[in-house]
Image (cartoon, rainbow, N blue to C red; front, side):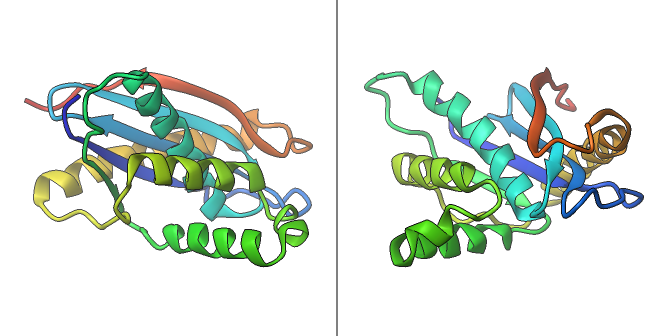
Length: 178
């Protein structure tokens, strides 16, 4: 398997109203090896917008892990690129909370998602997310951001206000610029 880049954008629509403490939101995580690309998209209703980023990564990394499927091939290098890579700190804090007070940690928004992300992080040996480092990466992240904004706007109308968590998730083929 070739080395991979994951471009990630997650968040709410600017016009979204709170429903309790939850907000309609969306994510797009684009996985590419430079030749092909797949975008993992999702919409839902969450309290913590950092958890939306975690959900996006879990969807993408689960697919990567499934592709490895017991193969003897080495795990590819995976770079995670985000305009706001600080969400990763939440993973560190959640792991710490899990060790210090597991009962309290269960009350965190999307607790099981953070646990899955920590497991995938350990298996795949992920580096911390980073900001884009080239004009090409910036352009790709802008495209991902634009698609996420479209989905976030849709989530305001389509996601039930009673929902909690990601309510819809799907892959999309993505065209890479030549």
